[in-house]
Each structure stands twice: as C-alpha cells, then as structure tokens.
Length: 192
Image 1 (cartoon, rainbow, N blue to C red):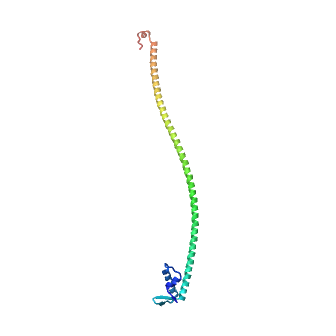
Image 2: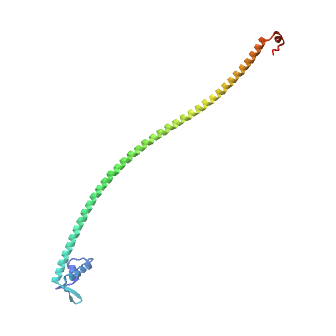
Image 3: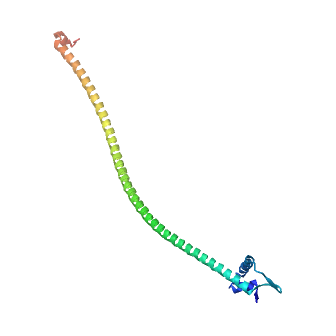
C-alpha cells in the first residue's frame, strides 16, 4: 500500500498548525533520498517502505533537533542561573555600597551640621566683636570730644591766666611806679 505526503505527515504526528511545514520537510527528504514517487489518480504516493524510511530519518532528525534544542535550553537555563547568581551578587554589592554611601553621606551631613554650628558661633562672636568695636568707637569719639572740650577749656584758662598775668604785670608796674614816684606825683596822681 502507498501513502501520500499528507498521510506520512499525519503518521509522524504533525498537528494541524504544523502540517504544511512537515509536508515540506517530507518533500525535501524525498528529493534528498531520490525516492521515486508514483501517481495514483490525482495524488502522488510513496511506497510504504520508502515512507517508513522517510519517517525514520525525519523522526531521527526531529529527535536530534529536539535533543539539540534541549541542550540549548539547558545551556540557556544554566546561563540564566549564572546571570541570576551574578544579579544576586550585584544586588548584594549594590545594597552594601548603598549602605556605605548612606553611612558616608550621614557622616558628611553631621560634619556639615557641626561646621555650620561653628560658623554660626563664629558669626555670633564676630557680631559681638563688631558691637564691641562700635561701642569702643563711640567711647573713643566721646573721649575725643571731651579731650577737645577740655583742651579748649585749658586754652581758655591759659588765656585767662595770661590775661591775668598781663594785668598783674601792669598792676605791678603801676605799683612800682607808685612806689618809685615822687611825692609830687603821688599828690597829683600823675605817675607817668
């Protein structure tokens, strides 16, 4: 008995979705093995022995392809496991580094706060110093004003003393003239 290409594909267990692909594989194998095809009515048929050879060869190829695909899947699964392991290691490294960065950041923040407190203290000290400097400047201006006032008073006092000394000198001259004056000058009060 003979079989069509479709019957061979169905005998190999091809699904309705894969039937066209499987029929093409069977035709390719017929050409590769130089199997003779007979015509029975409208259909081309292949002897049962040749059909069995095709089925055996294609099933072996399918098994090899499946085996190869399984090996590739296993290799991919192994690589996936390696990548997952690397990913877990990277996650752990990342977590560790994040903790380190957070710790360093926390230390830096504390250092910044400490320095800011120092700066604020220095600013307060500077403000106090500036206020004291302003007070000293005011006191210095007041002292200078007092010194100027006292200097003026001293000059005025000196001038009065000079004026008094001059008057005293003039009076002394008059007294001396009176004492040295003659009797006639004393009576007439003309001492010159």
